Length: 414
Ligand code: AMP
Ligand code: MG
View (spheres, rainbow, N blue to C red):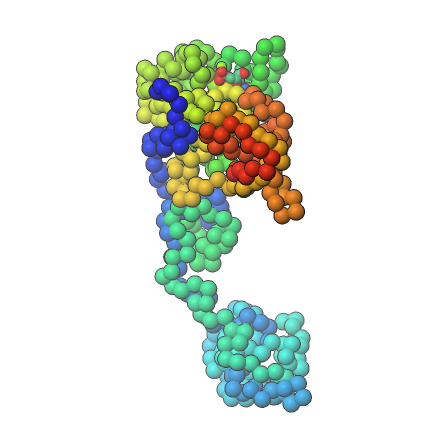
């Protein structure tokens, strides 16, 4: 590719090679954070029966229309109805049933008088009900009654395919009786690091070497988006070792091979040679900073993405390119990055590329503001660690004054 691709063009080219994975059925408690692959509708009304929303006395509203503090209406208590109690009880004129929150409304009753509006204010379900009760306030029909179907009607779609399941969604699925749920399969991603300077953590560090930190960061990013990971570690610069790594990924059936480093011009000798022999490889120059070079290809049919080696570039490259790929694979419909519009507390300079700068944003008396965190060099991770947002300077913009408004991507979500 000659010339620079815009970020959007590069994203679109990349995404055109991916489509949502198949689905699987998982137990409800394993489903949080996963993406529904079917729409879920209610197979019954919720609540499924009229029930009381208060602890009190189930009445016929017409029996207590005249009730007042000074002239209460006395009713005969004919039964006691805890939550989970019989739905077959009924009352006639002049009668009432003591009822607890969630208990089915007896037939004949059309309202519930809260205990507070009676002369029997005992809430402890251990206490037996009184024989008679004085009602000191009228109620209207339906007062303190949750109608069958008030929350959800049978047949209504309550969760749509492509939605990521949150705790409240899991609760609703359980409310509807689902013990398991159909979700998109998790992406399975092999992570490799390349470079003769890399050594694994937990070993000594001799001069000129650096620890392989990218693979740990990338694995953690992948797991944040619910991908499953095959860690292949550091592949040494030898054709047989690199082929062995790629073969291991192939045999494991990964959906994507993700590497960092070696995508700048002239590097990547073996990875490049191997992919060109058993697939293909393209090097893209994207109009962004950091993370301009990225590689995209395929090894024996498995997509391959090569991110830059500099840690901040690898991180941003992941958020800009790999995150959308994972969301597409996961079947998710809403891809918007959690973001916040902010005002700059300091001037910001860029080189005209779309820039993703490490920033700390905060809310000052109702206004979101941002300042940059430390040295923005693409090899530096500390400023990224100090940041809680990536501040996005659009392409074509070379300087922004104090007070300018920009978008930021939040880094501390979920
Ligand atoms: P490269 O993309 O190969 O030109 O590497 C750019 C920079 O990133 C170099 O300083 C590398 O040492 C560094 N780098 C490459 N891979 C990793 C890694 N896995 N962890 C940490 N730093 C890395
Ligand atoms: Mg290198």
